[in-house]
Length: 314
Image (cartoon, rainbow, N blue to C red; front, side, top):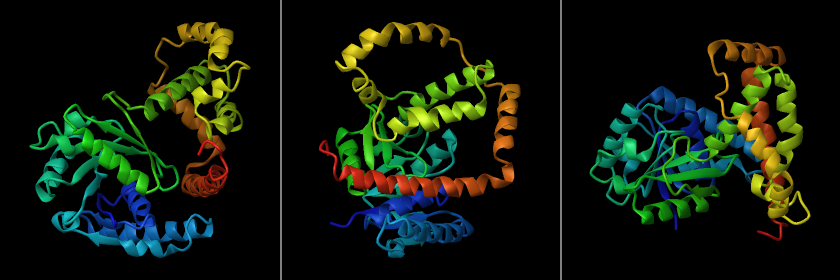
């Protein structure tokens, strides 16, 4: 069965979603009101496809032939079973766009948003069919990092969540279901907890910005690239997670008392972090470093794919 999907918005995330679906052999309509955005997306997708082929992540770059570029929303949604919205991260813009998606699609089309934090009940609550709407929040770039957070609203039909999950799994992604709406969903709440503590430690003069990143890069991140934090502690004590909690629970409980105050995200604090980061990486080299990041992610994804094929748990 060939899946037919529409990706609405040809910016950074929309381009990446188009790669995800096209690489899996889906028929993809990438749509945007801007002809310039569509032209830029076509060039960027072709370049990413070549990089993926060079990294051994795809056999060749020809998967881009599954993508067609549409300036008309109705044409893009014709025959689509699933639409991935990638518009501006503004509530009023999403409300308007989802009203247009609802009107332009069939009643069976799943309408999913890539939003990083806007709840489906907020952008879809005023629609005639909120039951077919949900959040499908990716990690950037989703064609290299497969996690997708599925966050339904109370009005979302559970069958829609299951259909979305099955389609994303068929596309090679790893969807998780967030059972109740919560600000920040799951990934950004976890990331936010780490970032908040990083701000406390660097802002408090306990560690430099560079050494803070080294702590994750050469410490926590090595394990977390193939295990979650709960499995990590389950394997870090002879008797498993209960044994770990007995040994270290009081330590973590004590630390939590000093973590209750909000960290300093003020302009002066961010300016100091900006200064520290620009010493390590000049602004002019940000794009070059982003490309380096993507190449490293490709290599890591290829390694994880090969290792997963020999993992007895999979």
